[in-house]
Length: 387
Image (cartoon, rainbow, N blue to C red; front, top):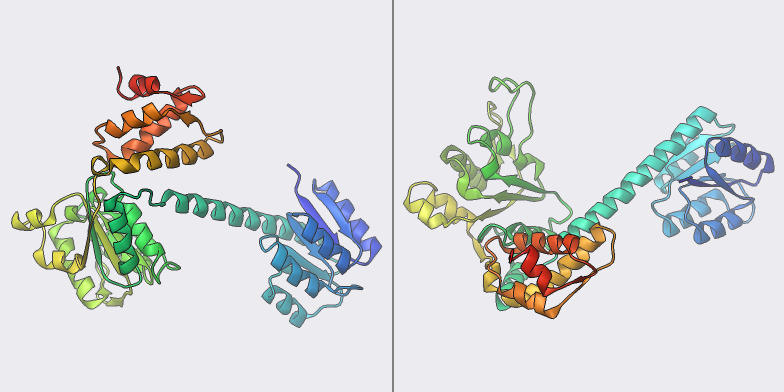
C-alpha cells in the first residue's frame, strides 16, 4: 500500500520538484501552497509524513508544526527551509519535528530521513496496538464475592509500596492480579519485570536476579544486568517463588532488607528501588515446615496476602468470562463474534475446570474454531466433553 506524504511550501517550483521525486520513489504526494491550506489538509487527512517550509504566508511552518502535533501527534513532521539556522532547527525539533533539512535538500538524505521517520511511526503504532492488546488481556472479569474482595484489596494495596504474596492454583490469574497492582500504583510508568523462578535452573537464578560481572564464571563472557536492576523504579514480579533455591532465597532476603544487591562475582553494592510482588501455587508455610522455604523470607514477602480462588469456586463469573473471551479471540482472528446458546453456557458452568481461567480460554478458542456460526450445546458435548 502506497504511503502518503504532504508537501507544504509556498514555492511552486520546490513543491513540483519534491512531488516528482517522491512520486518516482512510489509515494502518493499531496501539496499545499501555504500554511493555512496545509493545516486544513492535516485536519482532514491522515498522512504518513509531512514536509513543511518555515517562511510561508498566512501561517508559518512553526504554527503548522504545533497544529500537526495536536491533530496528528504520531505523524512525522520534517521541516525544510532555506531561511533557517541552528537555533531554528533546534527549536523545531524541541517542538516535535522529526528532523530539519536545509534547502536545497540533499535528495539522498531527504529520502533516508523520510523512510526512517515512517519506520518510527510504524513502530509507535505497533507499540500502541500491542499495549492495547496487553491491557485488554489483563482485564479482571467477574462480580463474584471472591473477585470483588480481590479488587477491593488491590485498590487499597496498589498505591502503597507494600510487598504482596499472591497464592492460588495454576491458571487462576495470579499474574493478572500482579499486573493490576502495578498498573494502579505510582510505579505504573516504570517497568514491570517478570521472573518465572520455576523455569530457571537453580545455578542460574542468582545471575538472573542480581546479574553478574564478566568472568565471574565460565560462561560469563560479559557483564549482565539482573532483573532487580532492570526493574529499578518499577515492579519485580517473582512467579513461582516457592521454587527458588535456598542460596537465592538468602540473597533475596538481603536485597529486600537493605534495598541493595551485589552482582555475582562483584563486590560493589548497587542500590535498587523495586517493589516486589511474588506468586506461588504452593502452600509456603508447608514448605517452611519442610525446610524448603525460609520463614524470614516468607514474612518479608507476605505483608499483604491475596488468595485467588479457583474457577470452580466462582462459577457465577463463567458467563461473563466466556463473553469476554469470545470477543477477544474473535478480534484476534478478525472474525465476527459468534452466538452461544444459553444451554451451552450452562453446561460450561457445570464443567470441572482443573485448569481454571487458562483452560476456559482454551475451550472458548476451540469452540470458536470448530463450531459453525452458532455455538450449541452439542458443540460443547462433542468438542469439550468428548461425548
